[in-house]
Length: 123
Image (tube, rainbow, N blue to C red; front, side, top):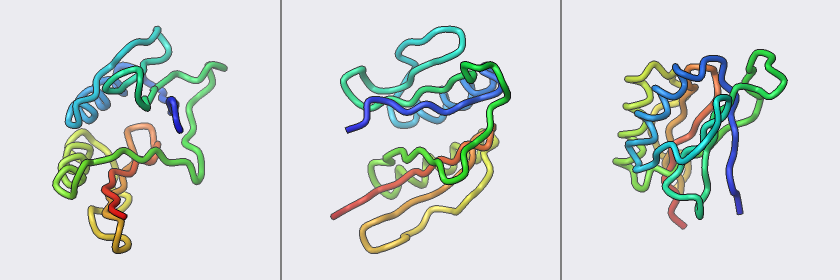
């Protein structure tokens, strides 16, 4: 259903160091991009996450209620992503835990305040 989602950053080099290390934990890498935008994923045939300097060149601001959810694969994967994000300087928004019987998740804010969720969902 989703092709890609973008999140704004203020310092591209800092964001790339964060997302290269974080998304590398789940086998994702930078696939392509230009100076102001870089796309991450495991292939162009699946959903991607892009980090970008806003097109209008104004300061990035995280949206209220916006969040990017990244599958962790399983509970151990969720825990690993959360720990890696925290190691890289993310801010805790909710440690790993069961939120409902079918959902296990963890929440952080990246270096620019963008909210991320790492999750496992079983139906």
